[in-house]
Image 1 (spheres, helix red, strand yellow):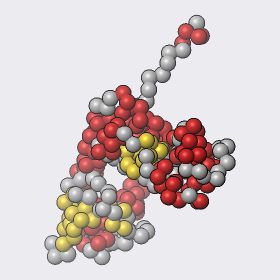
Image 2 (tube, rainbow, N blue to C red):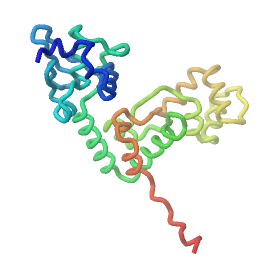
Image 3 (cartoon, one colour):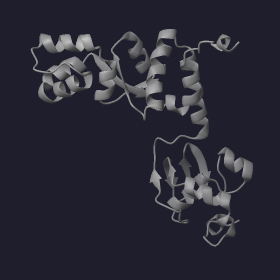
Image 4 (cartoon, rainbow, N blue to C red):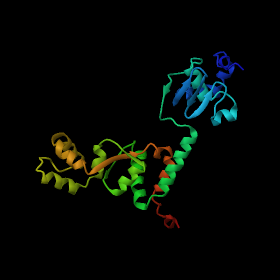
Length: 239
């Protein structure tokens, strides 16, 4: 087979639905290297040529996989249906499986307090439009950060209001003689952030704003099930 001719646009194989889907998938891959002389490459950690690929998809179907289509594109032999980008964050399926298994194992080893914190972070993110969580700095939070189960993000006023105790916030404002009406936590924090910037930073410094890490979000359902508190059995109410 002439691999260059095989990737000519006129080959009817490339019009099959499965192959069109592979071409679309080829648009966003991690192209690590391409050798124009040997017409080979390394894409998503797979060894790729115009004739074969070390990925599972090619070994099962023996048709051009997304990695082979991307290599042909990089060599100027094939046009893809859209704009191709090189995404260094994309991993091959084996890497993803290992990462998922690792994060699931980490979650399974958490103690009850750590599970409770991770659960609250995931609940806010999954069920409140990806809202971050403000947590008081503690050893538990630091351990979850070190294990990359959660990741730091930017200051979020609504999350800060949820995490703040009204009595503590009022005392903070009074102790610093701030001219702020002490009605709603969100209003107090908003005025602090706009009119008392240094004091706001002092108050915020005791918190860390977090979301589930990208690694945790590789297996969100499984990890959420692991850290979710056991539901109280209320079946007796219906007896």
